Image 1 (tube, rainbow, N blue to C red):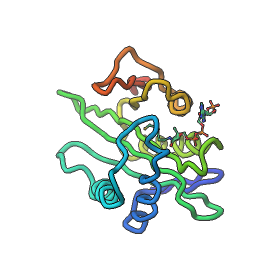
Image 2: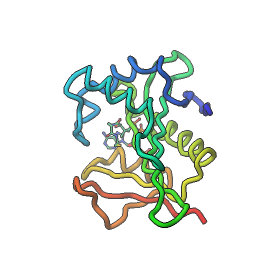
Image 3: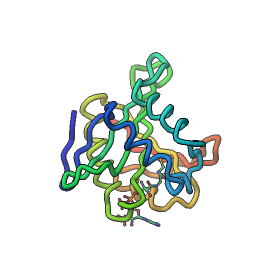
Image 4: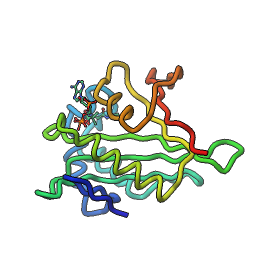
Length: 170
Ligand SMILES: CC(C)(COP(=O)(O)OP(=O)(O)OC[C@H]1O[C@@H](n2cnc3c(N)ncnc32)[C@H](O)[C@@H]1OP(=O)(O)O)[C@@H](O)C(=O)NCCC(=O)NCCS
């Protein structure tokens, strides 16, 4: 499914997006707050191709979408949802990840893209709750998830990132 917003189209990652997404994820600025930069283009391509292939673990779903500017067709963002079943239930949680091309940051693209992405995931996968892990001091990222209705919890993950969570869907 594709979502269209005022400036963007947000659609599932396709083979024809790979090289442009590799161009973006190899930019060091994207990893300044979160770490985890790929060592080189080959490693980045391997990562993007794994996203495209989908989760190798049964029961876990990887959703990867790209955002393109309607006006120019440029790839300006990547959104990720990892859907994991809750132990012992049929409910699932969706952990969000996102990045915006440095040339396009600071103009509300993350807000617009993630609102559209969450809307699509609600329709297709109906997760019970949305989660995000946010590095200490990453104010821009906190604003993005706060606008989606997530709030900070008291829990930190193993990397020391704070877990933010939406209300649980009933
Ligand atoms: C986090 C990120 C996606 C934000 O993208 P963006 O398109 O610049 O975000 P927006 O323009 O939609 O702005 C989001 C909010 O952050 C605020 N913001 C933007 N840049 C900021 C900065 N440098 N410092 C503090 N706040 C900032 C904006 O004011 C906005 O909040 P508001 O609307 O409540 O005022 C982008 O910085 C990025 O890709 N970073 C690298 C990848 C990453 O860290 N991803 C998040 C972890 S998964």
